[in-house]
Length: 477
Ligand SMILES: [Zn+2]
Image (cartoon, rainbow, N blue to C red; front, side, top):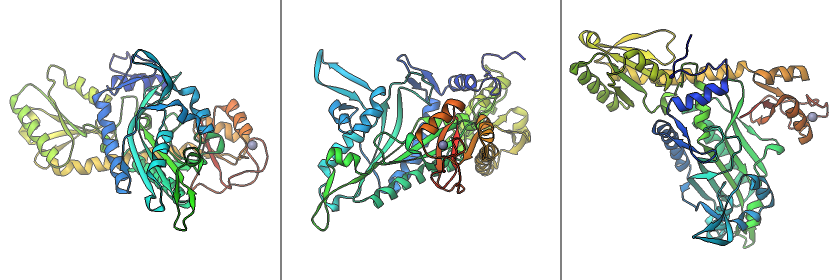
């Protein structure tokens, strides 16, 4: 079959080509002129806004306040935390000239904001009464990217970064886990991504963190995508920036800090978890248009009925859109909304209007189309959308479970990571992780929080297993 210009390469033929073509053709994103940058188009940006609203509400409900810190940070700030500067140096964009002159001190374009936030925290915190300090910012960051991929790895991306300071380790660890829970919940309940929350192994930790936690999702090619991270910094940044307070007993103490982030990468995760050969499949809770009404024929009567229906759906809380592009054939428009992943399509023509119905087609409509009464469409569709949302989560969960295998031998391990994830015992050594990566391209994704216990020997080198649990390994984006 000849592929026309609106179609995409099938997933089974070339998953990577499928993704690259789809994010462009579905009008989510366009490559920017500077290397690795992206223009997020209105359809993609609406998706981000809907996700952002859900996450922002939860962040505020748990007592955090939004603030904004500058894009430009003095280079000396980054140098104060040794691991942090080492980890980020290769990715930094540095401003050396401005206003026609060379600057006395170069400025870095923020790759993340721990240092500038740390400096401000040291000014704002003096007593135990100032703690905990719970901040969040919505911003862009720049990390120079040599092999860019839209949404997944771009030189500039959007995110939120939470930054908090606490009196002790217990408070900061509780916060680290709270942020991880927020991410798990948003991914599962809003984006229908059945992510696995867990801890990163030491080799995969954030630069400057004592402990790093992650949520990992499985994409439809079996690869893993890290979709959000939460870090316990210990007193590393408090030591570097003198974030300290006077305790109740009158002693000067160092704060324990955290940071946590979720990014526009989530859009890539949604595309690769739910999409198929026809295009995007958007979870209703994030779909810019949950219901698209496609008018058929050129009658004013049909157009008026479609608009009236859309208004009633909007009043019922449904994001409805009327496609009146009557210069294009209905078939072309059906195909277009499949490509763009609208969960529900309603077809409305003169004959449907006469019988008081519209023809409903779900984006994953194996059971086929069916007529629904126009009169009660606003009562029916919210339930249909909820059902579709639940179906996506169920399908993705089943997919992940089917492709995750316990591996007790090296042979089982290589088989498991070729198709998906392996749950295996590991010694915890970085050199052994490197061996595994060199041979299979798989890396430790996380030690799942509620994964099965695991002891015995490392699946690779035979040394005693660490962590007391099986570690999830997979190839990753
Ligand atoms: Zn080992």
